[in-house]
Image 1 (cartoon, rainbow, N blue to C red):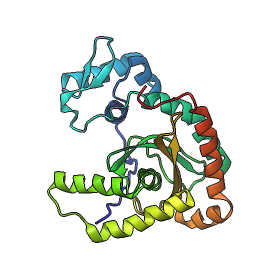
Image 2: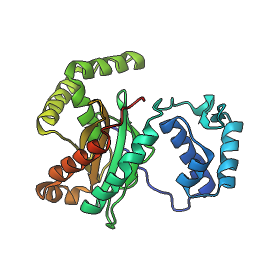
Image 3: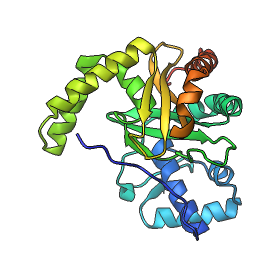
Length: 264
Protein backbone atom coordinates (compact mmCIF):
# COMPACT_ATOMS: atom_id res chain seq x y z
CA UNK A 1 0.00 0.00 0.00
CA UNK A 2 1.37 3.40 -0.95
CA UNK A 3 1.43 6.23 1.54
CA UNK A 4 0.48 9.71 0.44
CA UNK A 5 2.53 12.53 1.89
CA UNK A 6 0.24 15.19 3.30
CA UNK A 7 1.47 18.74 3.56
CA UNK A 8 -0.67 21.84 4.05
CA UNK A 9 1.41 24.99 3.69
CA UNK A 10 -0.18 28.42 3.95
CA UNK A 11 0.22 30.31 0.65
CA UNK A 12 2.32 33.44 0.50
CA UNK A 13 -0.66 35.57 -0.51
CA UNK A 14 -3.78 34.07 1.10
CA UNK A 15 -7.26 35.25 0.18
CA UNK A 16 -9.04 35.65 3.51
CA UNK A 17 -12.61 35.34 2.19
CA UNK A 18 -11.82 32.13 0.32
CA UNK A 19 -9.96 30.73 3.32
CA UNK A 20 -12.90 31.51 5.61
CA UNK A 21 -15.41 29.91 3.23
CA UNK A 22 -13.32 26.74 3.02
CA UNK A 23 -12.91 26.69 6.81
CA UNK A 24 -16.72 26.82 7.12
CA UNK A 25 -16.98 23.81 4.80
CA UNK A 26 -14.57 21.89 7.04
CA UNK A 27 -16.61 22.80 10.12
CA UNK A 28 -19.84 21.65 8.47
CA UNK A 29 -18.21 18.40 7.39
CA UNK A 30 -16.69 17.62 10.78
CA UNK A 31 -19.47 18.77 13.13
CA UNK A 32 -22.62 18.35 11.04
CA UNK A 33 -24.36 21.49 12.35
CA UNK A 34 -23.19 25.07 12.79
CA UNK A 35 -24.82 28.16 14.28
CA UNK A 36 -24.08 31.61 12.89
CA UNK A 37 -22.64 32.80 16.21
CA UNK A 38 -20.35 29.78 16.44
CA UNK A 39 -19.14 30.27 12.87
CA UNK A 40 -18.25 33.91 13.58
CA UNK A 41 -16.47 32.99 16.82
CA UNK A 42 -14.56 30.10 15.26
CA UNK A 43 -13.20 32.21 12.40
CA UNK A 44 -12.77 35.44 14.35
CA UNK A 45 -15.03 37.43 12.03
CA UNK A 46 -18.20 39.46 12.47
CA UNK A 47 -21.62 37.82 12.42
CA UNK A 48 -22.52 39.80 9.31
CA UNK A 49 -19.45 38.51 7.46
CA UNK A 50 -20.15 34.95 8.59
CA UNK A 51 -23.76 35.32 7.45
CA UNK A 52 -22.69 36.45 3.97
CA UNK A 53 -20.26 33.57 3.63
CA UNK A 54 -22.81 30.99 4.76
CA UNK A 55 -25.43 32.51 2.47
CA UNK A 56 -23.11 31.90 -0.50
CA UNK A 57 -22.57 28.30 0.60
CA UNK A 58 -26.33 27.83 0.78
CA UNK A 59 -26.71 29.42 -2.66
CA UNK A 60 -24.15 27.03 -4.15
CA UNK A 61 -25.64 23.99 -2.40
CA UNK A 62 -22.76 23.38 0.00
CA UNK A 63 -24.89 24.23 3.03
CA UNK A 64 -28.54 24.30 4.04
CA UNK A 65 -30.55 25.39 7.10
CA UNK A 66 -32.70 23.24 9.33
CA UNK A 67 -35.86 24.21 11.19
CA UNK A 68 -33.81 25.62 14.08
CA UNK A 69 -31.92 27.90 11.64
CA UNK A 70 -28.71 25.93 12.11
CA UNK A 71 -26.50 25.41 9.09
CA UNK A 72 -26.04 21.81 7.97
CA UNK A 73 -24.10 20.19 5.09
CA UNK A 74 -25.74 20.66 1.70
CA UNK A 75 -25.94 18.16 -1.17
CA UNK A 76 -22.98 19.68 -3.01
CA UNK A 77 -20.56 19.18 -0.12
CA UNK A 78 -19.54 15.82 -1.56
CA UNK A 79 -17.74 14.42 1.50
CA UNK A 80 -20.24 13.11 4.00
CA UNK A 81 -20.27 14.88 7.37
CA UNK A 82 -18.78 13.09 10.31
CA UNK A 83 -22.34 12.31 11.41
CA UNK A 84 -21.37 12.95 15.01
CA UNK A 85 -23.29 15.80 16.62
CA UNK A 86 -21.29 15.14 19.80
CA UNK A 87 -17.96 16.13 18.26
CA UNK A 88 -18.43 19.82 19.08
CA UNK A 89 -18.98 19.00 22.76
CA UNK A 90 -16.02 16.61 22.69
CA UNK A 91 -13.77 19.33 21.31
CA UNK A 92 -15.04 21.85 23.86
CA UNK A 93 -14.17 19.52 26.74
CA UNK A 94 -10.82 18.38 25.40
CA UNK A 95 -9.44 21.68 24.08
CA UNK A 96 -8.17 22.99 27.47
CA UNK A 97 -6.21 19.75 27.90
CA UNK A 98 -4.72 20.11 24.41
CA UNK A 99 -3.59 23.60 25.34
CA UNK A 100 -2.10 22.39 28.63
CA UNK A 101 -0.15 19.57 26.96
CA UNK A 102 1.08 21.90 24.23
CA UNK A 103 2.22 24.39 26.86
CA UNK A 104 3.99 21.61 28.77
CA UNK A 105 5.85 20.21 25.76
CA UNK A 106 5.89 23.30 23.52
CA UNK A 107 4.86 21.07 20.61
CA UNK A 108 1.80 20.66 18.40
CA UNK A 109 -1.05 18.64 19.94
CA UNK A 110 -4.04 17.24 18.04
CA UNK A 111 -7.51 15.83 18.71
CA UNK A 112 -9.01 13.53 16.10
CA UNK A 113 -11.85 11.09 15.59
CA UNK A 114 -11.96 8.00 13.38
CA UNK A 115 -14.49 7.48 10.60
CA UNK A 116 -13.94 4.10 9.00
CA UNK A 117 -10.37 3.95 7.75
CA UNK A 118 -9.84 7.70 8.02
CA UNK A 119 -9.27 10.18 10.81
CA UNK A 120 -10.58 13.74 10.97
CA UNK A 121 -8.63 16.32 12.93
CA UNK A 122 -11.07 18.24 15.13
CA UNK A 123 -8.59 20.56 16.83
CA UNK A 124 -4.91 21.49 16.90
CA UNK A 125 -2.91 23.57 19.36
CA UNK A 126 0.54 24.54 18.12
CA UNK A 127 3.67 25.09 20.18
CA UNK A 128 5.63 28.33 20.05
CA UNK A 129 8.90 27.05 18.58
CA UNK A 130 10.01 28.47 15.26
CA UNK A 131 10.36 24.95 13.81
CA UNK A 132 7.16 23.09 14.57
CA UNK A 133 4.49 20.94 12.94
CA UNK A 134 1.63 23.03 11.59
CA UNK A 135 -2.11 23.18 12.15
CA UNK A 136 -4.02 20.01 11.20
CA UNK A 137 -7.56 21.11 12.10
CA UNK A 138 -10.02 20.09 9.38
CA UNK A 139 -7.67 17.66 7.66
CA UNK A 140 -8.64 14.09 6.79
CA UNK A 141 -5.91 11.43 6.69
CA UNK A 142 -5.67 7.64 6.47
CA UNK A 143 -5.99 6.15 9.95
CA UNK A 144 -3.22 3.66 9.17
CA UNK A 145 -0.72 6.52 8.76
CA UNK A 146 -1.66 8.82 11.66
CA UNK A 147 -0.29 7.85 15.08
CA UNK A 148 -3.57 8.23 17.00
CA UNK A 149 -5.40 6.63 14.07
CA UNK A 150 -3.27 3.53 14.51
CA UNK A 151 -3.87 3.61 18.26
CA UNK A 152 -7.64 3.75 17.74
CA UNK A 153 -7.58 0.96 15.16
CA UNK A 154 -5.49 -1.19 17.51
CA UNK A 155 -8.29 -1.02 20.08
CA UNK A 156 -10.79 -2.51 17.60
CA UNK A 157 -9.07 -5.87 17.48
CA UNK A 158 -7.33 -7.35 14.44
CA UNK A 159 -10.37 -9.14 12.90
CA UNK A 160 -12.44 -5.95 12.96
CA UNK A 161 -9.60 -3.93 11.45
CA UNK A 162 -9.17 -6.46 8.66
CA UNK A 163 -12.91 -6.30 7.93
CA UNK A 164 -12.62 -2.50 7.59
CA UNK A 165 -9.88 -2.74 4.98
CA UNK A 166 -11.55 -5.61 3.15
CA UNK A 167 -14.66 -3.43 2.85
CA UNK A 168 -12.58 -0.49 1.63
CA UNK A 169 -11.02 -2.68 -1.05
CA UNK A 170 -14.44 -3.89 -2.21
CA UNK A 171 -15.79 -0.33 -2.36
CA UNK A 172 -12.74 0.88 -4.30
CA UNK A 173 -12.70 -2.16 -6.57
CA UNK A 174 -9.10 -2.99 -5.66
CA UNK A 175 -7.34 -6.11 -4.44
CA UNK A 176 -6.90 -6.41 -0.69
CA UNK A 177 -3.26 -5.52 0.13
CA UNK A 178 -2.53 -8.74 1.99
CA UNK A 179 1.24 -8.31 2.33
CA UNK A 180 0.88 -4.72 3.55
CA UNK A 181 -1.81 -5.71 6.03
CA UNK A 182 0.35 -8.48 7.48
CA UNK A 183 2.96 -5.86 8.40
CA UNK A 184 0.31 -3.45 9.64
CA UNK A 185 -1.09 -6.13 11.96
CA UNK A 186 2.29 -6.38 13.66
CA UNK A 187 2.33 -2.61 14.08
CA UNK A 188 -1.11 -2.73 15.74
CA UNK A 189 0.02 -5.52 18.07
CA UNK A 190 3.00 -3.38 19.08
CA UNK A 191 0.72 -0.37 19.62
CA UNK A 192 -1.51 -2.42 21.93
CA UNK A 193 1.48 -3.66 23.90
CA UNK A 194 2.99 -0.20 24.31
CA UNK A 195 -0.27 1.69 24.72
CA UNK A 196 0.68 4.17 21.99
CA UNK A 197 1.50 4.27 18.29
CA UNK A 198 3.97 6.35 16.31
CA UNK A 199 4.00 7.99 12.90
CA UNK A 200 7.48 8.49 11.50
CA UNK A 201 6.95 10.88 8.57
CA UNK A 202 4.16 8.68 7.17
CA UNK A 203 1.69 11.53 6.70
CA UNK A 204 4.13 14.36 6.06
CA UNK A 205 7.86 14.71 5.52
CA UNK A 206 9.25 16.58 8.51
CA UNK A 207 6.60 15.43 11.00
CA UNK A 208 6.75 12.56 13.49
CA UNK A 209 4.01 11.90 16.04
CA UNK A 210 3.06 9.82 19.03
CA UNK A 211 -0.64 9.08 19.58
CA UNK A 212 -3.02 7.30 21.93
CA UNK A 213 -6.70 6.31 21.90
CA UNK A 214 -9.13 7.86 24.40
CA UNK A 215 -12.38 6.50 25.84
CA UNK A 216 -15.65 8.16 26.83
CA UNK A 217 -17.68 7.59 29.98
CA UNK A 218 -19.02 4.29 28.63
CA UNK A 219 -15.53 2.95 28.05
CA UNK A 220 -15.77 3.17 24.26
CA UNK A 221 -12.90 4.49 22.14
CA UNK A 222 -14.12 7.92 21.12
CA UNK A 223 -11.10 9.90 19.91
CA UNK A 224 -7.36 10.05 19.52
CA UNK A 225 -4.75 12.35 21.02
CA UNK A 226 -1.41 12.96 19.32
CA UNK A 227 1.68 15.11 19.70
CA UNK A 228 3.39 16.06 16.43
CA UNK A 229 7.10 16.84 16.57
CA UNK A 230 9.75 17.56 13.92
CA UNK A 231 12.04 14.53 13.50
CA UNK A 232 15.07 16.53 14.66
CA UNK A 233 13.54 16.68 18.18
CA UNK A 234 11.43 13.52 18.29
CA UNK A 235 13.99 11.09 19.72
CA UNK A 236 15.08 13.55 22.39
CA UNK A 237 11.46 14.26 23.38
CA UNK A 238 10.66 10.54 23.41
CA UNK A 239 13.59 9.68 25.68
CA UNK A 240 12.75 12.65 27.95
CA UNK A 241 9.35 11.15 28.75
CA UNK A 242 7.00 11.97 25.90
CA UNK A 243 4.89 8.77 26.31
CA UNK A 244 4.41 9.45 30.03
CA UNK A 245 3.32 13.04 29.35
CA UNK A 246 0.78 11.87 26.78
CA UNK A 247 -0.52 9.11 29.07
CA UNK A 248 -0.99 11.65 31.87
CA UNK A 249 -2.86 14.01 29.53
CA UNK A 250 -5.08 11.14 28.38
CA UNK A 251 -5.88 10.30 32.00
CA UNK A 252 -6.95 13.90 32.65
CA UNK A 253 -9.01 14.01 29.48
CA UNK A 254 -10.78 10.74 30.21
CA UNK A 255 -11.57 12.00 33.72
CA UNK A 256 -13.24 15.02 32.11
CA UNK A 257 -15.26 12.66 29.89
CA UNK A 258 -16.66 10.47 32.68
CA UNK A 259 -20.18 11.84 32.11
CA UNK A 260 -19.75 12.11 28.34
CA UNK A 261 -21.01 9.36 26.04
CA UNK A 262 -20.51 9.69 22.31
CA UNK A 263 -23.74 9.79 20.34
CA UNK A 264 -25.84 11.09 23.21
